[in-house]
Length: 395
Image (tube, rainbow, N blue to C red; front, side):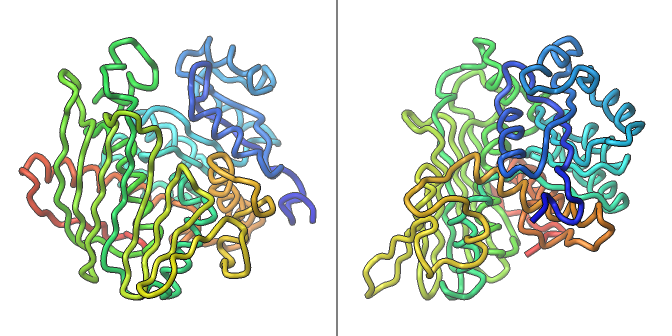
């Protein structure tokens, strides 16, 4: 089949952020082109104009499309007959809103890193822009792209686990056990700075991933939340540990725990879901395994691409035969691929789903900002229960 039929060409990608010394920009660039459906052709790779242009060669971006700012890029690309089809925003939180808004208003599709914006007010305004412009807007909660996460979601939605009673979602790291930000380490510095990260630190950075994973797998709608956030490393401005308890409409309970100060923990995102008929367990550091448990039966270990028991959502997310591990880049690419399907439809004048998408979208991004806001609010009230539901939350 031709690439991106019926367009019969690669999608043209523009990258914002990802300059020299960055982490997630390179991940976006790698994942976006993994399946030969897109090519990175333009970029504004840093807020420093000189650094932005100097970084272009690292991505093989031609000099004439290496821009000194995202505003310059938006204006210049609009004049081209071969302008970019979408932009990927891989910058610190406080810059997301203006960048995404600029491109969405101009009619460009956007794939934005999380959390969506600096605060909830910006997220709500950006949602209005996206709904008005009709662009495709994806948010890279990339862990939803793992094949066995999508398998777990399909099992829950098919009723294989029965009524969902409990979710335990945890994201445990240890890299900020010391004041790494004091050494001017780039990744630590902006994540712990309220002026760049927003009102939450650890919970905004990785707690949002843990919460989103539970929502994605179960589809349960939240009702109330109680949270306690803590700064354990003296002198740090934002939380480095936190625990939230969420009540859902159906009576289920979820705990969300996030830490960046746990010795020896690397990138340990894991989730357990308990239902009346069975339970599942998945670990991001061993993503090609899904444990399924039912009382009175031997535990079942599902492996990625491991057999006919796996569903369609899983099958469309794998690239390699069983026994060949797929992981972080491939999961990230799966988010891109499902967004590409919508981008191609929009370019071809076809209708596409905007709310109940396979990929995390603008509505998930807004709910993520609401999660951060309510967690901070509850924590300041000593863990008091507060309402937690966005009127446009999706199942």
